[in-house]
Amino acid sequence: MFSYLKKKFFSGAPEPAAPADAPPPPAAAPHAAALEVQQAPSAAAAASAPPSAAALPGSTAAPSSADPAPPPSPSAPAADLSRPSWFERLKSGLRKTGSSIGSVFIGTQIDEALYEELEAALLQADTGVQATQYLLDDLRLRVKASKATDPAAVKALLAAALADLLRPLQQSLPIGAQPDGPTVLMIAGVNGAGKTTTIGKLTWHLSNAGASVLLAAADTFRAAAREQLGVWAARNTVEVISQQGGDPAAVSFDAVTAARARGRDVVIIDTAGRLPTQLHLMEELKKIKRVIQKADPSAPHEVLLVIDGNTGQNALAQVKAFDAALGLTGLVVTKLDGTAKGGVLAAIATWGRERGAVVPVYFIGVGEQLADLQTFDAREFAQALLH
Image (cartoon, rainbow, N blue to C red):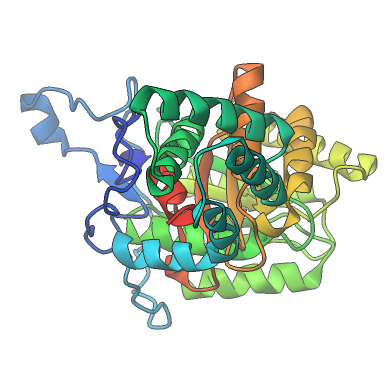
């Protein structure tokens, strides 16, 4: 039924470099800015039309659900998802860090003292030693090539350097690429990172984009987690598979099996929060992944880690640990509206660059509203941070 999910602002190839002081992207139609699911043509149309260039190779129509479509949820509020509105919220969330870095360029000259102050500001923003050194080296080259002498111009060059460093993280989340069966998303993270809330928001975006979603409450040890997921399921008029005190792996298996039988497009599995140092709980995550593969050998198709933007360099340590255990395919960075410093994304990008394989950032969040979870755009983020 659905060929794939793509971002409005990323078409599969990195966008050409844009001036650092360019205006934010134009407004998009409601909902399209966050997620867009393209429907496959009908059988009659497909027989006479050439294959869509946008469709993923080998994708076929998913079976339609035998269940009647649920009525629209009266409790799901309408949200303004225009990118300019989002850009302002992102700037507001990153204002603390942006002000700290931006103050370096006020009333100064382009000399070694400026680079030293900038180095200190970037380190305080949780950019990390390696990413900071990379950005400073890149900035020096850009300043020399452009012969910039104005501090504002150098600040713009820094924004461009940061956008280029972050651009490999900007990728689209594929949905519906499987020839048979649903796309299975396994969500992990530490306690308090915002996993369940992120799942609720992502479900809302997917549902509004036209995908049928089934949720799995595999956090079977915390009753509040099941209840919270149940609230989001009711709000989005989607089904949820849960067991009180049951085996998380068994719940995940039942959810994937049920989704295949009912013709659902997406399964989102919520797992219990855990620290990467809790080895027995990390082994449980590995078990969940193995059991999911018994229901669908190709699943989980995406293993996403939700990280709290306020945790700084600890977020990078979480990414490394969960990637070693599960093989992460993507990240969701939440709570950038708090005391988050934002520089950790540069650290994550540098880590991926050095090892030759990045873990993309699919979404970032700046608040509790549905519209506060949006797709990650590297240039937009750099502009918001260094506005």
